Length: 214
Image (cartoon, rainbow, N blue to C red; front, side, top):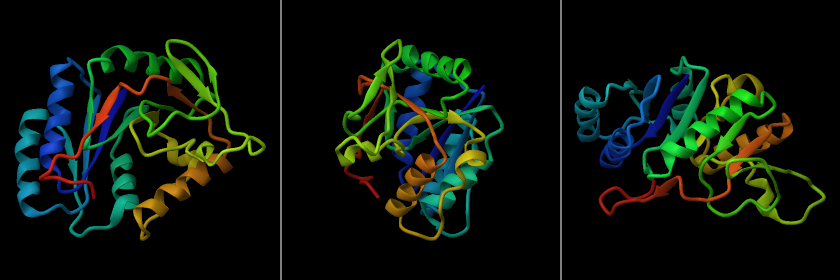
């Protein structure tokens, strides 16, 4: 029921680490989609090699069109009911195989929940405990603190694959930070609801020296 969607740009070593780690943890998916944003030729070549090993669908573009387009075309390629979205520079930990089925159960048991966050830059300030280490995120304009606006984030998340039907597509043709900011506001305005895993130990985020953050 779940497709692993990975966005990629010039970090094929990081992508390989992610896919290899999933395999070593014994995790399989209904499909894997790698959405590439016109990486350099050497990375495209490597993607072709990795596809032979990890059997993913590669979605490319002839020119760089930015994060919004990369996310949109990647999500369009997903055919399963649920999507696990992960950027290529995240790696699952040994905790992932235990936590992920619980995240899937939340979306199946709670039709009012739109996505489940599996990683965070910092603790979300207002939550309501649910079960199995997950909490429902609470957004209230009356509560202080700008951190509450990180209700939606681009960090690893499990979501319904019809995400665009409710929240719209990612904004294209603008800087990546603005693309994410637009989705934050769309998520809030459409009344999105989310859960988050309380312990930030399901994925680790690492940019190796030869493939720095973009």
